[in-house]
Image 1 (cartoon, helix red, strand yellow):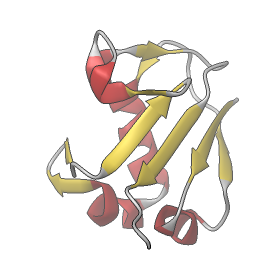
Image 2 (cartoon, one colour):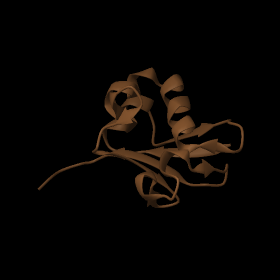
Image 3 (cartoon, helix red, strand yellow):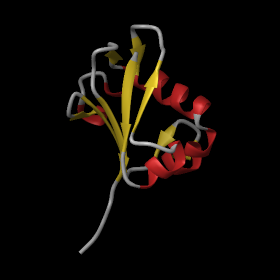
Image 4 (cartoon, one colour):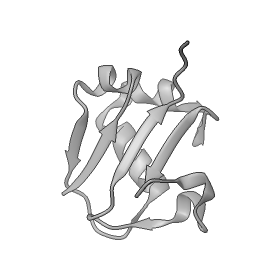
Amino acid sequence: MLRINFYATLRDVVGQKTIEFKLPDSLTVGQLIEEVITRFPALRDKLFKEEKVLYGHVHVFVNGRDARFLPDTYDTVISLDDRIDIFPAVGGG
């Protein structure tokens, strides 16, 4: 089982902080995001500014590293042991 942690307003959409997904091993970050959208369609508008293009303020972390900066970005293969965190940028003062 792959555990995905959601933060801020995304928790409201999924209904809790952590969701477990039963997924095949060797999925890419991009494929994982599509699986998340399939399970929670309401997240599409929160994550994507257009088809398969994440908003700049949305971050997907794999083991504490932003997927945008991984060597293969969203084509990075993840394992079921990886820690996945998805959150929008939050502001405050």
